[in-house]
Length: 226
Ligand code: CTP
Ligand code: CA
Image 1 (cartoon, rainbow, N blue to C red):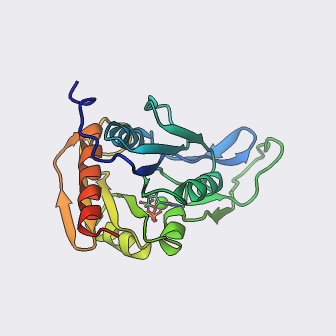
Image 2 (spheres, rainbow, N blue to C red):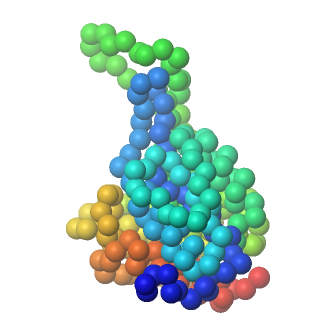
């Protein structure tokens, strides 16, 4: 009951969330991906919807239960996610990139299944487009940009570097080495970082984490109105 009786403090805002993992094809039967389950992205989408926002989710691979009353745009590869996010971000007030986007894709995608042979084999990889960096470089002042950061060491320092490099308003750092945080769990340990602030939270559910992130975004938006 508490969850549906929320104050609609995000009414009138368009929120774009990316969620899940991208899948980069090698051939018709194989692909490269990562451990993202999409739970954090979906929790953010649900929380924003409950707070009255109009929500679009660009979702890569995920088996998590989908939030209701949001527009779903399914994609597979990083390139497809880039195109969908670019289009949907054009009129968004807030963009939250919670997806785990592959940093590399196979340089060549084979039409036929690659047969094994004796000895080693290697796959040439090409960098994908950094979607957030693109948005940061081509931003309209209207759009609030929030990224996520997965790190196993020097979490805050490395995350702050990403905030600056990608020209973001906020980055949410996840410490993968902390128990209960990260992939597949229903809980998370996050630090919310902006240009001039840092807020570390204890272990909490992804639903609670989503509300903390949205609170921080709304607060920042109120502090720096356009
Ligand atoms: N991201 C993106 N496009 C990519 C790669 C990442 O938009 N091609 C976004 C992610 O969705 C996330 C943020 O950038 O919000 C940081 O992702 P992360 O993997 O933590 O950092 P990278 O910048 O990719 O650096 P590295 O993986 O080397 O730590
Ligand atoms: Ca990465």
